[in-house]
Image 1 (tube, helix red, strand yellow):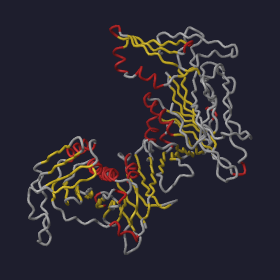
Image 2 (cartoon, helix red, strand yellow):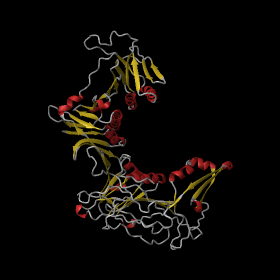
Image 3 (tube, helix red, strand yellow):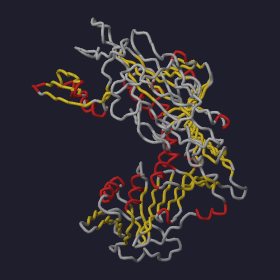
Image 4 (cartoon, chains in turn green, cyan):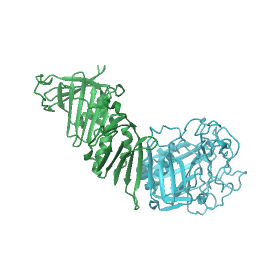
Length: 284
Length: 349
């Protein structure tokens, strides 16, 4: 098992840092899956996460100038690592002006991702900062736990409002309640509602637009033939939604969510070179 | 340089004729800060600031005489104390580095703020700062950071002996913040591990030194009888009157719980630090010159100690009055009454 990669371009480095920062806001530990072409940050829906799960996919070519990987075996040319994204985020945080960043999988005392940042300095030789981030190697027999989640059969799919606005609304609501209801219909309307003993607050969004999902085999999905005004709703943990919104540092190219009434909300945030899917289960 | 008028009456003590010391007292910095909080506002409104003490009732009074007849008076209580002075022969250190504080700050920024201690290791050709983890930490969970610098980055670089010293980073950050504000380069004097390391800044207006104990890689089990013991801090050059309240004179912060004498683990001991008091124009007397604590054979209950002191010496111009214009340095030890316990970080000065 070998892995080494290098980033030289500052813009790519900043981009990569941003992705890591977003991930670190969503979860404390996650799985990093490395393949020849892509990197994945995966969180599977264990009870410990409150049932939330995450799938984030990056094309390595968009970030790394060099990328070499050798998986556990020839026919399973992938590496699965368990890591704390906050560590990686911290290592990259001070690399703003780096000349190069190299990441390597090592195994001195224990498996680590060694991030070596080469910084400019006043003297002829550069400053080198290395961070050894401990990782856990995930054995092949449990790789199945980390498969890509399937798109749920949703009732409503809708584009999200401007994330900044949504974030400030949710942040204020978080002070009042632990749960939030998201409801939306196929007419581009979305409501965010909280209800406590003392107060209930609803924020209405209009004209959001609904993404046109082409059904694959022409058969009616549950979204077709649905009353356009009828709301699909789900009551979710407000903290998870707030974390998702707070972690977005750049406006995504596309941001939408799919709601399965009373079951799950599936958020999809697409940027040019990275896609993030986040599933939040509905609570009773 | 700072004061328009400076009047000081010596508190004479028959026991210590050779030194007339100013009133040794200590104040809580947090109490003094609000007095001088907004420098801009002060500059605009305050016409005069008068500072006076009344030793009899342990008060120090700051009076800000402002515009429009407004007078703000702050009465703060101080405690008498016996200032401890570290005796540390800086000029005898084989390793001396001088560098602008910006560089050190840039280096420290890579370490998490929760990082307690770091290790500085030097050879004539390289310098490395590394995060230090205790022996019993779970390495599979801790992130380790290492920074390599080239000697060329330092304004002055002298390495007489290859060494690796581990000291408290948190304390250093305070000094770095201060020196960045003053823009003065930082000098680092140190020796082998176990011996103290001194960070100092010096310019026309002031000198400040931070002396930290460094971890000592103790001897193996065979010497478990012999431990580096703390020297009781004699208040050798200070007033012995009224050790104030119930503060112990010695600076005991036990950092590591005492280990079983038979176990082959390495007990970690920190050595005491003494330094030459920064007294302008006087000969250094007393205990000056001793650079290390003696490794006494006796076992005591608290063999593991950590000490650090921060003291300031203000260098003032020679004035007409012969007496009393020397600023005595006050080394405030981090005294504590806490018991032996696991890792205690000392209060930040």
